[in-house]
Length: 328
Image (cartoon, rainbow, N blue to C red; front, side, top):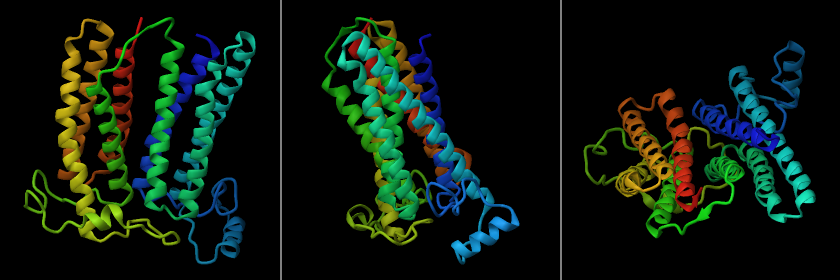
């Protein structure tokens, strides 16, 4: 396997780990385990010796170093930095290939990936400096998924030689757009700590349509910078509105995305059939995790798995789209 394929595959694995571990950091309220960036209380690692803790008291008066949370945050940064380094190498390799072939298209995707991962680094910094502001954290989550998706698409391109290009069905494109919206809603639910906005299922506070929902505050009211958003600051009616919207989106996703997957199970090309099968399995598992999460009052392992399967579901749909559009 050529170096660029090996590095891309490694980067995909790292990007997935960054997303899942980032979710774990957020779910364990460790996003501000280190209140500064890129270090931790002014140190490259987590300060634990008596001398370094005395230094922390001077530099960050009133702050208490929670070693477990701080290490989770720093490990997340170390993995993300390694991913950024791999993407930089990919860009360098693409420049070398461009010089040999004269094909400028070879640098296009690696360049986009490099710009994206640099912006992700900035979002990571703002996540800390702006005290886990929901809009910034949501953007950071979407940036991570975009990086993973683009790496996956690049890997598929590297393994495709002279494909037959087909036009995508508008219904499939609609499904992809809706999946992105649903993932955005999931991110907004998580970053606003609205996962228990409806504590029961299938009803919400015992009602089909809860009468205590505040959509304006949940979606349209700007939350100012400067406050600490760990734990969430939105009132319960706003969190209920966010959660309920995400739940309704999941129902639409089941029928819309499910019908797309079922349609392509009978496609004449085997790769498309396989891609549809994997997508449907990912969709069913993700929906089941979401249901059990509510029933168990947000078990940490399930909540982390829900984030992981959001990434897997996205990749499986991209794989389906790619299999439909590019035929070997």
